[in-house]
Length: 371
Ligand code: HEM
Image 1 (cartoon, helix red, strand yellow):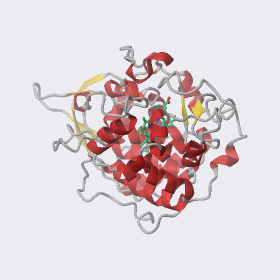
Image 2: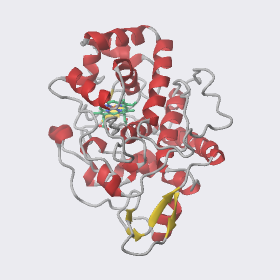
Image 3: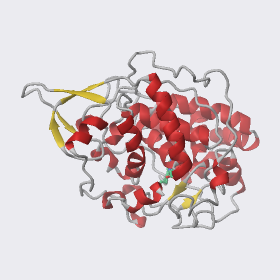
Image 4: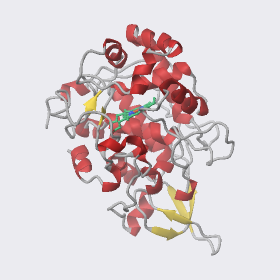
C-alpha cells in the first residue's frame, strides 16, 4: 500500500535515532527523488515567468532540490478543482489509510505561525513552505515527506491548487472522513515561492519539554491560540501513531498497530486510531493501557488546572469536543495565510458553514483489509 511504500522509501534524513528525540539533528543528505524538469513545472500550482538576471530567484522544487531560474507567480486555487481534488483525496484515504499523516502535515505547515510578525511570509503559517526540503528536514517534521509523496499525484492533477490549500484540504478531508466534524474551511491560500521563505527551525512544540504546560502556552499563544484551542487541537491525537524512528517517541509496535492498517508499527494514542472521536481524552484520563501512548504534553492536559476543565469536558461530551475541535482546526488552518481573494474561497457545494455535523465512521471497516 502507498503509505507502506512511501515509508519504505523514507530518506535517511527523516529517520531519527530513538534516543535523540526532537532535538536530533537531521542528516543533511538530499532527498533521493528529484522531479524531472517537466514534472517540476507541471506540479507547481504557480506559473513560471522568466525574468532577467539579476532579479532571478531560485526556486527549489517541491520535494526535490533541482533549481530553476524562474520567478514563481502563485495563483489562487480554483473552487471546481478543489471539489474534485477533495474526491481524489477521499479515494487516497480509502486505499492508503493515511488520515493521520495528512492531518499532521496540515498542522505542521500552519503551526509555524508567529502572531508577533506582521510580514508575510516571515510570520510563517499555512503557506505551503513545508514542501521545501529545508523545512521537511526540521526534526519535528520527520516522516512528513511521506505525506507529500502521497499527495503528489493530486497536486499533479490539479495544477491551480496551491500547496498551502492542498495541505489544508487534505487535513480537513482526513478529519471528516475519519468520522470527525465538518470543518468550516475556506481556501485561496497563496504559496511561498522559495525555500528562503521557510521559517527557521524550532517553532513547533516539543513533546517532552521540562515544563509541558508552560511550553504549550508559549508555542500556541505565539500562534494566537488559547487554552481551549490547545486542548481541543491536541484531541487530533485520537488519530495516528508515534514512531520511534521518526520522532523518537512511542513503542516500535503494539497490539493495536502491529498489523497496520497502512505501514504497521508505532504506538497509537487510541485503540481505533483511524477513528476520530473523543477516546483520546477518555484514554488519557484512564491511563491504564500500556499499549497506548501518553506524551508529557498529552498528560498535562489533565494536570494543569486550566487545561483540565476542557479535557474533562471533552472526555464526557463528544459533541462539545467536535464543536470546539472544528472551530479550532479551521482557525489553525488559516494561521498566517495570505488569501487571494482576501476573503478566501468557499467550495460552492460546501455545507460546512451551516452546521457542525459528522460523517458516519467508515475507516474502521477497513481495519481488517489488506495488511
Ligand atoms: C500539543 C503539542 C503537540 C505535540 C508535542 C505533538 C507531538 C507529536 C508527536 C511526537 C507525534 C509522533 C510523530 C511520529 O513519530 O511520526 C505526533 C503525531 C501526530 N500529531 Fe501531534 N503533537 C502536538 C499537537 C498536534 C496537533 C495540534 C495536531 C493536529 C491538529 C496533531 C496531529 C498529529 C497527528 C494526526 C499525528 C499522527 C501522525 C501519524 O500517525 O503519522 N498534533 N505529534
